[in-house]
Length: 163
Image (cartoon, rainbow, N blue to C red; front, side):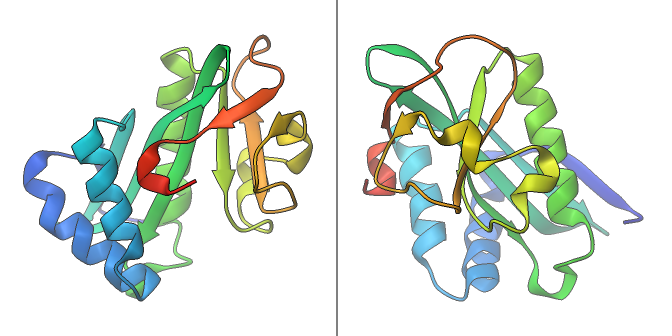
């Protein structure tokens, strides 16, 4: 997509991020989750996409614990302006975020999302299979950023996610 600028989210982006998440998901739940993750300090990385000076995409990554072991990261929520969905904005956000996490040494990233969307970025149900959580199934996936721990265990989600 032309004229798309990806950058780190700032505090001044919060109202636009809340509005975007509410419009993209058709409900305020994801905007509330973002606000609660921010308030709790449970944000590893937060990127936004701008087009023509307007915020049109957002992605958040949070710390994911693994009981008694080195943790990883979780992806979500990720939102794109409804008028630009299926235009590549979300893909650019996911790729940029995963690259930044890999560069920072994150070992693994988990996502609860569309089974037809996230595999294009390397996510798979099999990569998450050895981890215990209530979301087991085709919509709970992981992508390994590097070989090594954690290889299994019970996942610990931030309290904002209500898990």
